[in-house]
Length: 338
Ligand code: NAD
Ligand code: UDP
Image 1 (tube, rainbow, N blue to C red):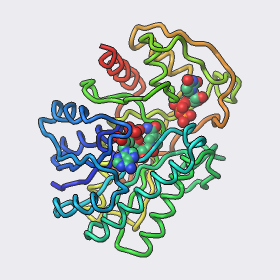
Image 2 (cartoon, rainbow, N blue to C red):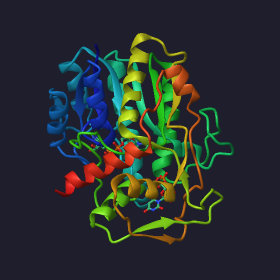
Image 3 (cartoon, protein in one colour):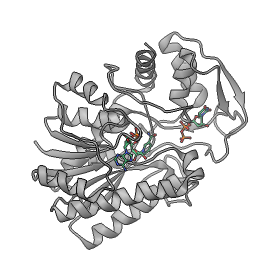
Image 4 (cartoon, rainbow, N blue to C red):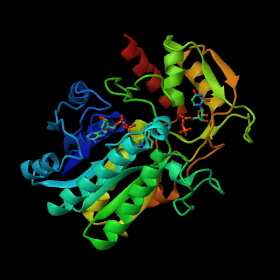
């Protein structure tokens, strides 16, 4: 059993990961400034697990605050770093806010960890680092493409920072490259809380189904895919969360093969936008109002993961399919709407 510091632990993926850490018998300590989440998430975590982790409402860029956590909890073994801004479109409008938050939080955290002799670090990266890959499924050794947005660039830059720091210090890091996280905990006690109009497909679908949005626009049906709509590798957030537990355990056990490792987290299977819509309608018995519109600027055509490295090395495999993803997303939206 280990104690893990989770930054951004009241956020969407962070909260599900805290639940899986506690379910696996570990302890969690959360730091989050609530810039994109709510303290009530802690109630959801407690209802699911029966445990309420220590919570620090602080900014990860605040040196004194982060140092204070390591002083309060000298038995922290590893850190999972979720805290970041994540809206691609907003990052184009506010690049300095994104570089400032995403880079400074990572640098401050690394400095505080290393000063506290905590060498194990798990990072939230993204398949956006691959851009439109030349080969599919895309493996971890695929070339990193020029980032499409300041947000995507912060993920690439953080990976570079980790590479350099792992080469120079005791740091042992795992960078997890998420494909498209969707869905919610089956209890519907925690889930995604999109602010404003969602950019992502799944919250747009559920908000349309419940009547918060008039209609969903399918961004393009003229791609080189079986039905013409864009293809992504959607992954259930609970599966994603479990991979973080595996990553921490791998580092703490000393099972990692290099001081920095990269793993794809996806199911390995791509679904088109129209397939997701059809699954949502079939599984939930709900009719969705949608129209076909033009392509969205900056979108890639298709991407899905080669998961063999995470399956074989990390000992993790996604277990939940598209039906569970759309069912849990809908259950969560209904709870939010109630
Ligand atoms: P989220 O916004 O729900 O969670 C991030 C949390 O971090 C929020 O609770 C926010 O309040 C907090 N936070 C942000 N900046 C902070 C700071 N400086 N100090 C303290 N807390 C801060 O986002 P999420 O979807 O859970 O994403 C978690 C991580 O995964 C992010 O790094 C994101 O870039 C990455 N990621 C997400 C996706 C996705 O589709 N959701 C895909 C790939 C990668
Ligand atoms: N998409 C869509 N309508 C929407 C939102 C998304 O057709 O309102 C499509 C988008 O073009 C892409 C897929 O759904 O093909 C997933 O988009 P999302 O923004 O969720 O993830 P990303 O593009 O970042 O992989």
